[in-house]
Image 1 (cartoon, rainbow, N blue to C red):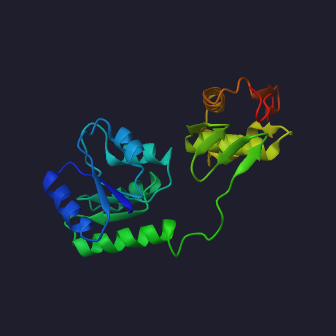
Image 2 (image 1 turned 45 degrees about the vertical axis):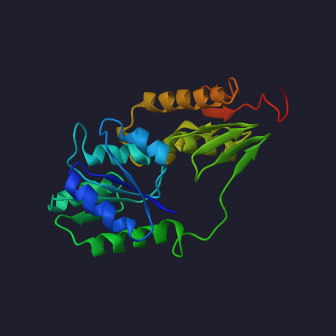
Length: 234
């Protein structure tokens, strides 16, 4: 059963959406604590999110950016804001579609079905899931997962991109400029230290799997994967 997460602080609207969507056989996850939205998201792992813009503490743009660090599931904004810039902001911050309030529930269902078809169904890309393997280390880019032996760790999108580049280039060096180009569209506005911070996070992800010091800094060039582990080695 596909899961739809509703992030809407107007309880009347949220319940209306819930009761209508449930009739079509979807499982609904209602957001109740708007301080811990990302925790609810991680537990539920929804197939699609309906997201309001005006929310307590942080707005929907902020939460969509947080979702996009960990998932590519469809996000449909539902908002009373009708300005063109609001819709542009929604798409620029990672949204896939925009519905204005008041809305007709049939329109919401049609857009939900359309996005689910594009992401997982008949219109989705028809190819086998990618997997990169090196000496027992397995990266699943579409899942944002890294596995070694019986351990698994969840990655952000940028961590996944870095590890994917290191695996693809191994045993060669992944250049700093190449990594910056892959991670950020506009390198001119990226602080040089930002890549260093992300490399540090990648190293911590390897440590979670019991792999110590796998990313070598090649001074003046970039980074290289240093295979110091072996599958099956204790």
